Length: 260
Image (cartoon, rainbow, N blue to C red):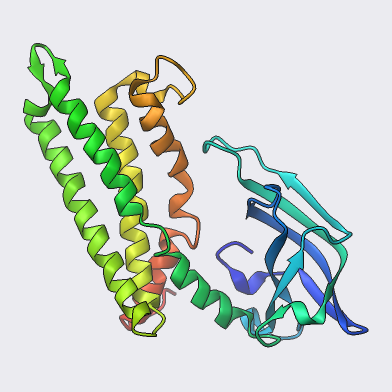
């Protein structure tokens, strides 16, 4: 179903005190790690509209009927998979929350996930490495750090790091106060994921063509940092809800009208 959770089709039927799950999931992270358990959103009420008939099950990955197929990608180390469920029997006590409470549970969980990784800190580390590189590398007899354009780009990234940190703290403060930071988490997610992509892009620009060399290449500058930062963050503006999804969440929080 991707970002359109209401179109979810994987079904779970309650039979003889257990749920029988049939369907398919895609882009499942670490399913072949091997994961011992998975959290699955399933449709338990096929007649309910949209997200109203969805429940959450905790499923033992060793259960008969589960097939995991890795999905190769260009985004660094392998982590994504396709998972198939064929008459997988799940005990009824593996229901998380109440039946048909899935949307409420996943909505809360996603808000916490969106601020669960300090992406601004990781981008800040890359920035520090790039600043050191600019100070120690000369082009045409002049250090990169003296180039006004390079200095402006590094400064812009530093400002973005600080902004991402502050909006993340705002979301965490709401969470610490016992509320679910839905809008704040969306804002933090947008700032942090775009920041990580910009850090990778700037690394590619400063290091030149060799920056595309992977971490296992002895000629890769900075140990392949630029390649790693770039490819690992191509999908970050999709995971946990696309940028468009985050903007829609914020728009609803601001009371803006839905698009036609």
